[in-house]
Image (tube, rainbow, N blue to C red):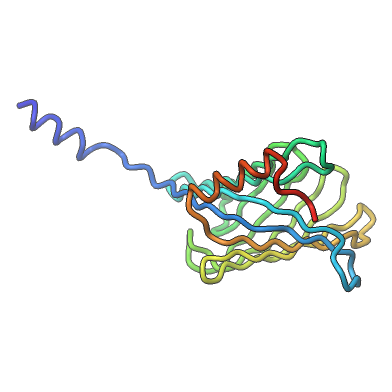
Amino acid sequence: MKLLLLFFLSACAHVPSAKVEHYIGDITLSIPGAKQPFGKLPMVARITKDPDAGLIMEEYVLPGRTPQAPAREIVTNYTATEEFGVYTVEDNLKSFKGTVRFTGTPWHWEEWSINARMKDKGLVKGLAAKEDGEIRARKIVYSSKGKPLFIQREHLRPASAAEYKKFRRQIVQRKLKYK
């Protein structure tokens, strides 16, 4: 009887649909029209997707803005809207809030766009694509008056959980910094 009960309970148990992806990469910053970027920094990302709940969470770790500053962790939560493939986004620092529109295969999207308003009333607009497992994004940050301030290019490569932890630790310990 106990064996039958265990079998029944395990068959009825809900298997979570959340999937975690790990990435390592970098961000390159440049002024619109400039030939050379003014900054490059390493980053790691952990992206958790839960189709059953309609949620996505991205966790990014970047070096501090100065050599003495601690690493920054930015957590962005995506919440599905009533429109398929459209999500509201907001980060844990309350520095931006906006909308992301995904296109392609549901939960394996190939492209997406972002339109977000910053806390200082600036605007971020961007496009991203996932190809061969790599994510490439290009975002333009505008002032509150609509003037383009800088371009942010992100390049993330898939990594194992162990590689992610190693690079995350190096960023937090200030071994990986801005260039």
